[in-house]
Amino acid sequence: MVNLLNNLVVLVTISAVGVFAELKNKTDYPNGLSGPFNPGLTENTEAPIQWFNPWGAGWIPQGCKDRFIAKGYNASDAQVFNIKYSDCSRAWTFCRHKDAQLSIEDMADSFGRMSVHMRSLVRHPIALPSSGGCSAEAYTDIGDIVMYGNCKAITVWIHETGHQLDARLKPSERFSGTTPWLEALERDSCVPDSYANTNTVEDFAQVVVVAQFNTLLGYKPKEAFPGCLDHRHGLLELTYRYDYLEYIGRCSNRPDDSKVVSTETTQRERRRMMKRARAQEDNDPSVVGPCSFP
Ligand SMILES: [Zn+2]
Image 1 (cartoon, rainbow, N blue to C red):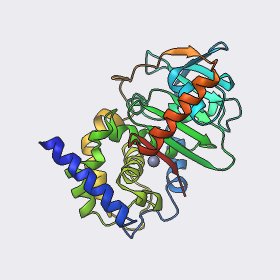
Image 2 (cartoon, rainbow, N blue to C red):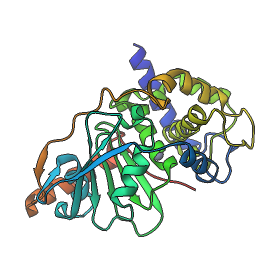
Image 3 (cartoon, rainbow, N blue to C red):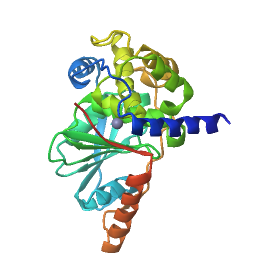
């Protein structure tokens, strides 16, 4: 019954978002989160990279192959590599298109700066090229995150991982669709920035950036409207600070890696994968984005 109620609330919220374009008419950080949040995060975090291990040519995780083909790229143009951080016994498998603006080092560094618990929500970090700026997507049923273009900013990585925290592999039970979250939203008077006004899911991910910063540094960058998002921020830290946001601990409950497959793709397989991806991206609420930031 509780689940049913939550789902009803989600439906009502989504339709409400469709009618009223914005959640709030005040933004706490009017120029976006990147400027106020990235310098402090860069200063106070470190990626505990232990080793890199590139895969040989010809093989790729299925999750990466799906994304490459769906976006019109060849799987054989992927650079696949394992990165081991000192705070987790299991490496992560990353995939990078050879023309992506993010280097392997950029990906390992930006991802590694998040707390190990946040990293543990992600299956494969993926980087693809873009002709301008940075946008990103989260596949919240499987745990993959995809960066398009120059997405080195830690706030972007926290935001996309924030979508994974929201769903925790069960998009139908998103925290941002629960009654406590929606009541907190009702009581607050602002959104973090204009992008958070897109909908409740994007708003949640931007509040995760605020909460991650506050957990690590013990304060928030100067707000335009002090306290205006304290109900959501407080609820988020109360619920997730100890298990996810603290910069201590070990990895646990990570999604399993996807199976290893050949990079070779027949035309028939490519058509089938692109068709399936188009159907999914148009209708599936587990695909969040593309997120792009002011
Ligand atoms: Zn987003």
